Image 1 (cartoon, helix red, strand yellow):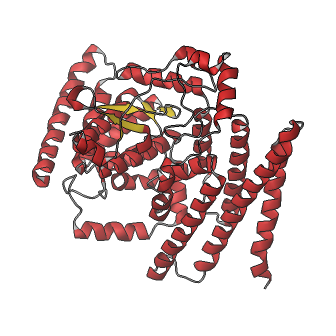
Image 2: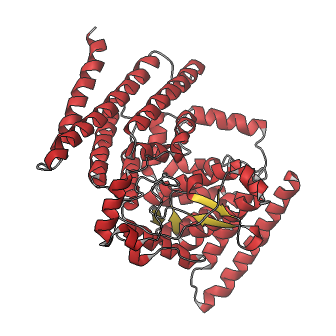
Image 3: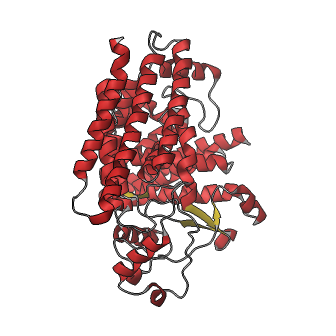
Length: 482
């Protein structure tokens, strides 16, 4: 009886603690709007605590007495994952704002259970538009002019509202701090109740990306830098501040809108190839990566060479890869393509993941580390059975340890690659398109390194030899998929 009561008591205590922390975080003396703001913050935080609390209770009691790894355990775990994902989806929709962004962040990570990623994926296009009067006040204050003296025309209704910060309305940064504080409280509580679940690094990465998304000066700089790497910039500098970003309007179709692409006689496969080449160059060559390439942030314009051009939106979240990491990641893809298991394990030590490096081929190419079958083709039945047995032996502590041991740059890569693979799948692109593009970009990324005269000749010979090996391997892939 005492044990059954402990859950509600813990929930009540947690809700009270969160509400107290939120109230203490709010600055005093804000006038008439302070009290409603405090009440709203407490309501959002309490709702989050209660939702996560009931999720915890569901996991605790639903899985109690079941042997870990058994068929009954896996079936029940999938049911609880789905129930919990639906509860968290309702929480994100009720609290909106940064909770929607958190849901988007989680859904884009391929390493989370599929029940969560599939359920929360509907949040990718959700964000509540700001009140126009709030937007008008911010624009006029930050740019120092009347709205209609700046723009000949200004549409009060947003075309889209996928970003948390279309304009930084009053209180947005404070709300972020409160929401992150609540999420941190919940993360620590979960780690205390379930020691195998550790999310501190993911939360830190989420906080970093949200802080970047609120700085429009940095977003403008990101856009300019990306433009210098590729084609052109579309930021209007004189109408941009930390809270207001003015950019050229670009029309186009959402990248995964197949009906619109076909009506415009644009090949979805060619779009997929152009997209993965763009991001391959970002990752392997420039080391400067757009960190939020969900379908709402990529348009296909029916203009440009080859009947279309790609338009990247929302340059708030970027990651500049550490140079050593970028080179190691190039080497990892070289090893993945050549099926060099020894090199993969060696690079795992560089990345700090140790024994979990053997899962890199599974994550990136859909192959086991022992596999010798051609990349881009389906795994054999025996290989699938071995992989299934291996994955069933993993516990949540293994997954948490793997995610926590990854360097921050790797988390960005995993999220970006997961979003891109989803888009390529929707466009119907063959699997070898991504593999071949990444292989070529990885080699180019290695070639770009400065060499002394004495080293250069030998290095180029190695690269040419390697290129021949890789192209030979991919010719076999194409033969097997044609």
